[in-house]
Length: 336
Image (cartoon, rainbow, N blue to C red; front, top):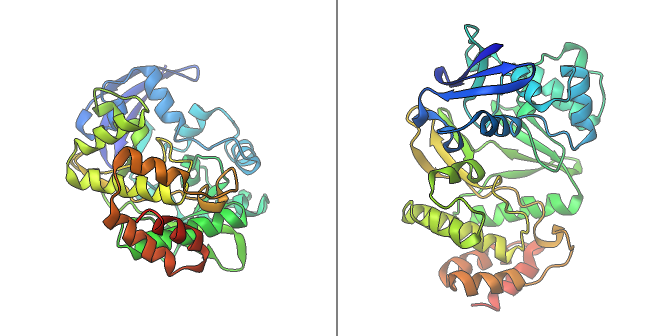
């Protein structure tokens, strides 16, 4: 039986036991500093949370990385080997009595070696790579990896040219409105790569709604339930969520599942600070799975949540300033 401690920054917040590769017990020590999903979690629930932090094994590059660098494709083992390090939150795990501060776990130069492997599908940099890397907590449908540039962390993603254009141009429009949105940039000289700036600050952690929903009585994925849950947190949260829903409707984003929106919490107190910015729009606009843009989602938004004409006017004006979003501007104007 192996005993481990889960830390939030340098504070022990839970403990768990591993027996022959299976987590057999989990106990919260400081529930207020845990993700909502873990406050009253069983061993099985903790295992699911932990595995969501592991390398996504749907892509060739990540499977190859797991096999060559970590020697396993078991998601529980991967998460524990890499101490569950993540760029976007402050949680790590260690065997009992074996704690190390977060800043000693990840060498940015080493991580950039790993990201080079991911981005070019080559093993030339693996010989000098260490096991612990933020890439181990990158999940999702597309090949992604973190890089450290100009003293900041950027998430690189490989995708189609259309998806890259949608992600960058929608981000520009949202930010032009003054709305909270992740910063996306084109990667110079490569139209199938995009990078986004880490939006989590020091002593903060991101918690996706899929985990945060455990704070509410109704945890279902019904759209109205989600809206009411977020609205119950206060007007600033309701307004932030309405802006995300409106942007999704105008830009026909069909991929706003419960892991690509959420909240920013204090790592020191556990307090919810704000809603996370709008991010992940690479399956929106003309990059949506149907590759066909229309106003059908905006029509449904108006029916379900009201017109919100002031917000829509802001968004339309931002779209009019970008030729790429001309169709969205025209569709939005027809609803004003």
